[in-house]
Length: 398
Image (cartoon, rainbow, N blue to C red; front, side, top):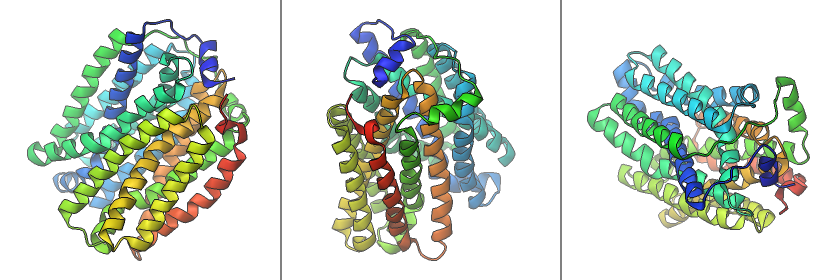
């Protein structure tokens, strides 16, 4: 049973090709807004810290708390809303997320900003649990991976455009304006979503007690566990890549900005290529992507002093990590059957636990020297690769 057939069991909409494409575009733009909002505090950390009069470490803690909020709430909140029609749930979640983003922009102190970020985090988990299944419902037969890659392209766009532009706007007009601008884009997209997204019924009712049973679906547990480890390794390095490039690689500020843009641009390529191939050669694409990421980490660890090697490593790393969510999410949906949202909620939880744990791990290891971080990330990939090999049918074309 494919992910598509599982979605059809809960009601695949019969819509025109034009409306399918419009719907996928709305999902991609919403993804862009969600990821931009999630990561924006990283780019504006000094501005927020100075304006609110709190230490930078406390502002950085918002990222970790956000990730753990998503990790803890994604599965139960998705279960509680499982019977909601998808369009209604999507619009409610996006409205809550926009409200949290507006409140972030209106925050007058740190506690208010923390509450606003918590609200965004609770909506974030449900959003990511349902968006891939919604994309599959809009996909042409046999192109579920491609539809997923279109949605995940919003992730890469957020890193290439959303966060840099938001940070630049915050530097000129203030960090609050940047949050409000992103919220405006989100609200405008929400209006379009009400017009173009098709109505699809919810899935079978899920109770909290059902969630462990969902996790016992064949092949799902190793994919979820591998996701947590791969993301943990990535964010062990990514959270502190700027000081690594500065202090160890001797790149100046302009060069670091250029490299981070290259990372995002390479992510577009990784997302596109994985979407083209994952439906035909899922196992080859999975292991090829993990191999590319491992090669990038080795190049970082051994050759960051040599600038051409560092540039190539950044490009490989960006392409590989952008491809991973497409491949892993597609594998989850292949195993999900009639419960794609519940299965995806476990994936989302694992992904965000990996983000939070990786940020903490990188901070602890980086207190000695950030030069160890590429090797720490590489070590974590070893058990992740073993788990991927155990996933079996989750990586097979069906």
